[in-house]
Every structure is written in structure tokens, then in C-alpha cells.
Image (cartoon, rainbow, N blue to C red; front, side, top):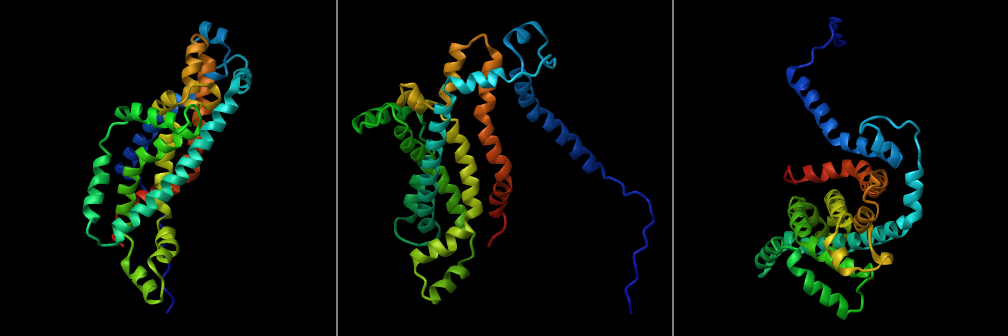
Length: 286
């Protein structure tokens, strides 16, 4: 007997008050989050004279890209290259080191498991600023002061505790039956890590990559202390130097802010699905 077709009444479905409130709050949040970025773009397309003489929220009379050409020709590529190089190397070392540390802490039982994990969690409370002088002395003794390489070690070291903490909790939720089945088939701990645990931790690694990527990209304190010349500094110092050099040229500074934040915005846009999956993966016990 064929199932009966559902007869539609033709009436439009009603939107519940909950969804109405959700849409209103989403629109308000969009204005709060997107308003400043729209304001940056608006000012960056104005000349300095038009910005000082016209209204702050008025559209530019002539949409000009002169500010972008000025920033691009003022050493921006060197700052950008240093930031990208430091980010890629630091993030790669950080994610692999975090995964190597989180695997035994989450999947193995040994005598010093809890003390080591407790020490890593306690290291999260160490302020960065009290280590600036020791890190400065260390980089000078290693002859890497005033080079981008001096920034890689601190970026990895100070983001490692929170990364191990998050990734350990993530790996604990991976089903142990999968690993046990692999061990029965002759797969050792080393092979199980690369063939099973690491692929299943892609969402967690992506979440850490986006989170730590934003932190490393915006790092200012260590760049200020461990670098001196323009050839070794990254984009946060470029914003600081432009602010001192072009104090009254607000459109030029806004242009630099847009170009500096654009890579991180694109990273989040293309990786937001991985970020959400990584945040929700620990909600269900594997």
C-alpha cells in the first residue's frame, strides 16, 4: 500500500519568537563586529585632507588606492614576509610538539603522568613579561638576536602549555577500541599515533592552529625586545612604527591595519568549519 502523501495547507510557516530574537541578536552582533572593519575600509580609501575636512562616516568623494600603494612601497613586504615565516615555522613546531606530548599523557598510564600534566597546566599561569630579560639574554648568547629565528622559540614555548592541555583533553575522547584493534593487528604505539590518533585529531589541531595562529601573528612584546632592525621585525611592529611616523595620517595607518589583519581574517573564513568541529568534538564521548 502506497504511503499517503502529506497534504500541505498552503499557509506560510510561522517563525517562532525564539528565532526572531536570534536573528535580531545576530544582526546586532554583525553590526558590532563588522562596523569597525567597515569604518577602517572607509577611511583607508580617503586622502588625509579629505579625512580631516570631511565627516568621519561620509563616503569618499573619490575612491583612491593611493594609501595602499604607499604602504606597499614602504617596506610592507619585508614585515609581511617575516610574519609569515615566523608563523609557519612556529605553528608547525608547536602543533607537532603538542601532539607528541598529548599522546602519552592522554593514552598511556605511567608513573609521572599526572605530575607532568600538572606541571604543564601550572606553566599556563607564568606571565610572559617576567621572562623577557632571560629570553633576551638567551637569544644574545645563541647569536640569534635581531633575527626572525629569535621569535620562534618563545612563540612555541609560551603557547605549548595551553596547546597540550587542549589536545590532551581532545585525544582522551578518541575511542580506545580503535587503538586496541590496531594493536591486535600488530600496530605499535608509534604507528598508532601517526596512522590513527593524529588523523582523528585533525579537528583539534585545526582549532589550535587558528587559535595559536592569531596569537603568534599579533605577538608584540617579544618582537619589540628580540628585534631591533626593520629587516627582522614583523607586522605588529610595523603598525607601531607607522603610528609614530605618520601620526596625523590616519588613513595610512588604517590601511596598514587592514592589510595586517586580512591574512588572519581569511584564515578564519576558510578554517571556521574546522574550528567549530574542533570545539564541539569534545562534547560527545567517543
